[in-house]
Structure formats: C-alpha cells, structure tokens
Length: 326
Image 1 (cartoon, one colour):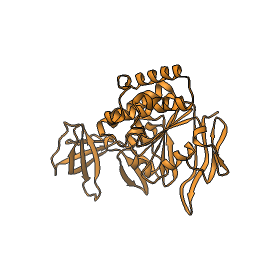
Image 2: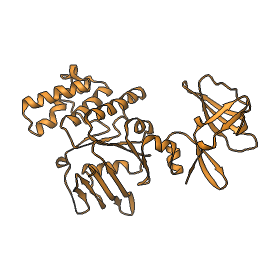
Image 3: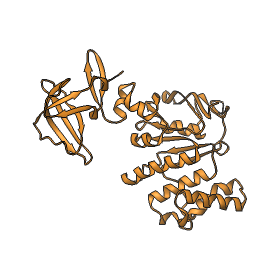
Image 4: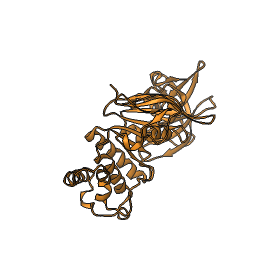
C-alpha cells in the first residue's frame, strides 16, 4: 500500500483552477519534488497535503485513510506531518535547542527522552556546539539546519518542504541540497519538496513531478525527465535544450549532445558559424548558426574548446540524441 495518495485533487478559486485533476502516489520513504514555475500550483498542492487548504475535488489519503476531501479535512496538527517553510519560521526568542525541542514539548515527550533526541538530531545536522545560541547569531545555512532538525526530531510520517533554500546564496544552496538528501537517506521519511529550481529537484529527488498551469506534465526519475522529456514544456524547463523542427515534428536536442570542431566529421556534419559565446568557467556556451538557416543552436563545450566569433565550425549531431516532444 502506498504511503501517501492524491486522487484527482483540485483546488478552484471561482472559475480559476489553481490545481486540477492531480493524481500521485508516494511509496514509503520516497522523496518526490513538485517542480515548476511560479503560479503552476505546486505550493497550493503542498498546502492541501499539509491540511492548510481543503481540496475542491478529489481526496488525499495517508496509510489508506482519507485525510482530505471536499467534505472534510483532518487538521494539520493531527496529520503526523512536519512542514518547513521558506522563511524557516524559527522563534527568535528561543535558543537552537529550545527551537528544536518545541515540538517534543507540545507532544509531551518525557524530558529525558526529549533531551536525548534533541542532542542526537543536533549532532546529525552538525549543530551540537551551537545548542545555546539564538537565531540572530546564526548564518542562513545554520538556521536552515535548525528548521530541518526541528521538523525531523518529532519523527513525522511525512516531511513537507516549501522552497526551503530560496533565501540562501548560490554556494550555500548547493551545499544544502546535498545535506537535505543526506538527511533523507538517513531517516527515510516520505518527503514532498516544492521548488522552482530544477537543480535542487535533480539532486534531492527519487522522482520529480513537473507541473504547469495546475496540471502534471510528467512524473519520472530525474535522469528520465532530462533524457526523455515527453513535452516541449518539460524539455525546456529541465535543463537547456534546442528545439529542432524536422518533417513536421519537434525534437529536443541538448547543447552538450552536439559535437563542435574545426574539422569536418565523418558523418552527420553540419557547417555553421559562431554567432555568440559566453564563458561560464566550467564550459563555453556557444550560439552557432548552421549555414543557410535562420535559427541558431546552443552548443556546450569544455573550457578549453575556444572559438572566436565569426569562426566557421562543424557540428556533429547524433540522431539518437534527438528526442521527439509534443
């Protein structure tokens, strides 16, 4: 039996459908991300799972029990779920230890057991030495660790995260992606993670749900979404791609799947001109225009593959790398 099941749920505001006909099943211990642009319905879906919003259609089940439907909603405090918000929502007048232990106090966990669990989780999130500090004395990454520890220490059935890394700088965001996945691998809590950042979703998730205008576009493992997108929207949202029109069909062709060289390749060679370029440290991002064509292609190469603007080059395109999308 699935741990969490969303059956055809929807949320309407008048004539506007924020979420429509959304169905998803999560296995015990699975990490699933809801990924999409602003306004696609991902946070609305998460808030329905949490019990903050009632669905206008469909049902949500936890361990086979209906916890949300248009006729009634089990309140958030009775759902055995923890939620981490974008703002972290840690209390400024409490120390790290007090923040982490607040949920245990609410649940009336005996003091000795609570102290043991607080000490253990702070050690796991590498915050043990900072137990007596206040939030104002912590960095953004440390505050995020406190929020994670507080959510996990109560041993929830479901962990919900709503854009938890959006307030961090780029380097810290990258570090915390791996930290969130590490904690998931340790505790195996069934997790739903909302983000608009495809890199976060790719690093953390077992499966990704790509959403667009309140509906599911595709649900798959990260590598499948990237390598075999089913729609033009998914291909364009997950990573960078070129859309190539051939014989009345549209194909997705990733920039790194195109070979770029000064010499003509043995097969599938297309002569082109470098029309723009950007050096990004780890790679060059070239805009190349096949001769006789009006549309340019993006091509990624290693940092040592350098071509001047206006250079004539050859593109090598593997037909197997072209994925047809709707």
